[in-house]
Length: 394
Image 1 (cartoon, one colour):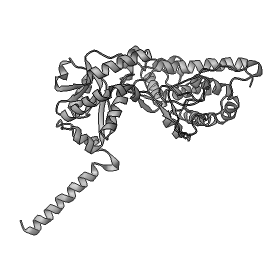
Image 2: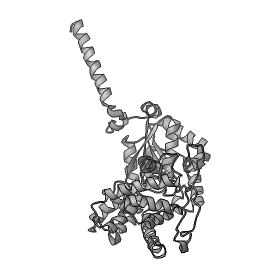
Image 3: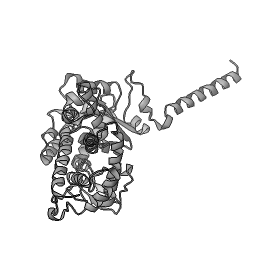
Image 4: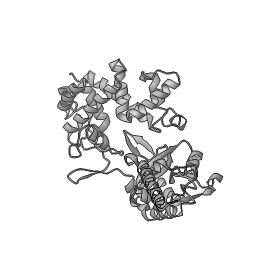
């Protein structure tokens, strides 16, 4: 080959390499999204830091990972998110249906480690390094006692898992968990900072469900409910019943999930409905944002033509998020029930969405949630609204 031919060939190979590099990062996509998993690739800590994304594998569940009103929760996930920050990476979650699938995915290179307490004694898991058994057990047992929630109790001889061909990641994660065990409570406790610098931790002050029945006054915020209920076509007493269920009329309320204010807007929801961080604890702004969300949900479920029936779906979606409600509707349809009717149909599957036999079904796109809370939410608001209608005139 001539010298000129060699030069042309080198230039051509250079162009192809550049094009490949650009295509693997199209639209800001991480190279991890297109990694070839068939050859069991070796991704260790330096590779993760270079790419800027940590992929964790986990299962749905109250202690591992779940969605609530469009935001990500679960104490295992929240701890993993802090580790990702410590190494300068963002976090991406990939779900599995069971522990065997978790093992298969991590061995295929579909994730960097398993952020779920895997059974260390399982014979399949001899090809993994286990990290944080003592730290996680101590924390989860303390958290279970603090929250009076037995489902959070640690499993014996269980820990997070890293492939043995990622020794630097395994060592880094192990050292980080040892150093930061005392911070796990802080990592998993919601704290909301206002624009003025004030920090709000979970709190809820209980007020009377009716301020003065003889004067027809439900709360201090009746004028707001009367004003904004007109914008969504609701009885103002219904909006008052929902506000009591959300915050017990405490405009400074913050839930354990980070929902804020009179109508308990999540941070992401507040942004979506045009309520800024500086406004979220102002009753008028909070109710305005809730009204916009109610109107959005009313439009989403407009195919349910009966307005009273549609109300059940609006309330359920406000509480759980429309994704979880649509999962319950999909299961109702699968099992021969009416996905557009609440009582005795969709509500039955909402109640089952905390059971792995149901939330792991392929029709379910958003996984686990506490369906009993959503079921009680709808029933409690409708019951209180009925009481308000009897005792309080329009």
